[in-house]
Length: 243
Image (cartoon, rainbow, N blue to C red; front, side, top):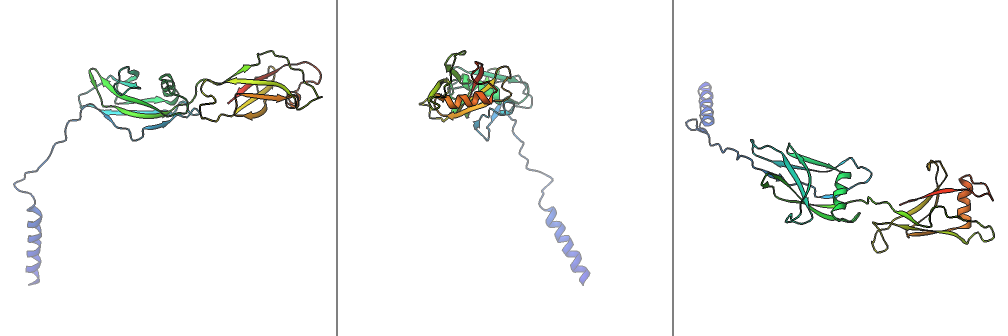
């Protein structure tokens, strides 16, 4: 009796399994052929880092039909309608990457202010066809270094120990990317060095957030002595501005 029950259960199980398929037919939906389209980036906020100029700033990817091929052109614009598109480059494949330094130059050239978010639109074109647009918010870094505006190179300064706290010289700076109304805080420091040393050893002034710095007799004399100048003998110092 036990044998009959076991055999019958096995047949029912087999019939239940095979009954899911009728006449060997399968309901299959074929995958659609992929067309030319931009793959929307997952990250659209880019903070460009001046310390990593060779790192990728972004990578665009797109799809095309199996028979599709390049060249593809990557375009950027400050206007959504691409009334004046800029060509960033081309690719035979379906990805395009631009380095941090390259993209920073593009964004600054398009009118962006350093360290301020700037909207830039991108798309890919192939012949007369263009993909949809993606938009990045990019914060570039400054490419124009600050300069010492005055006094002129070669200015002579006579230091006096009669009034150590008196101003010996006032250095004024120009910074094309920043100003008093910019809202950014920039640290400016003067670096002094003995002539001909290529600033191998520097002697720094105090730091200021203003576009000028007054050096007292005592402060400049200390720097001069540390740099190796001999008291009461005229000699030269080189100076540069660090921001």
